[in-house]
Length: 363
Image (cartoon, rainbow, N blue to C red; front, side, top):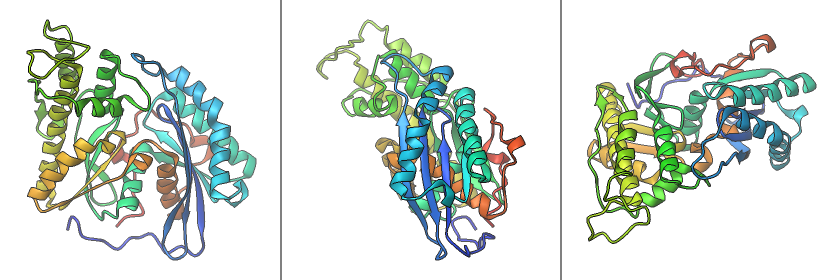
């Protein structure tokens, strides 16, 4: 039954295990050390991250992002090991993001992982980025068998677990929700520091006017490109005032647009998540991915869950936003089930769907 704990095929650890996780599928370079103890506890020993930030109005290009990861890899990994108080010789396996993501950044981090593997004679474990988010979310929140809303810059999916597979119930038909928010932030020239999505969230809190936008749910799927085009059109409306104004005036402000975009898109995501919950009879929702740290999304999901007598699980930006520790967690679970990635098969793939992964550690 959904929401009911099942007996795991993952055997109790006969000793302590340590994994180094490396993440670099987009503009975040992360390294983390995860420890699985004999008593069954999973402990985050370190979780270090460095973000490639571009000027306002600009996105991040694959080549420049890859150069950033190469430049910062040594420092991030050294800081990670120092904070955890361990050496590479104590690590059991090196886990890296195999995909999905941007090609050049993925390859840069995989190259680092291969180099460390050869230098210290440690096995490699390739990890699906999406599964890393899910497993870290489950570990941190304690959610047993939730419907998962995975929302990030590159992915938007509603997922439920069944028979050793994370099955996709619904997804975006075009662009991801994080990409939609990021692109709109560039349109209105918002800062990319600390992230475009966070800055849209702060601006939305100052908005007062809910403007009509396309509501594009299509069964269990959503379409976001038309919404982006529609809200961009408001920026050339004669009522648009980039500098803002009072709420009594008949004007449209950037804050109103941020507010309207969030309310419309998040309502769509809540709807398809609720539909998945009804379909499988689940009483748990887990929100993962960078956009999952948005407080308004969590609030709207909480209202829906309360009406269904369900619970919402979410994490803060330490674990929602791309990080190395989530790769270490998912990779260590795979490693303990006997899985290793041969060096010859340690290449990356930009398209690596969540439902292609054999989730051997769950019943």
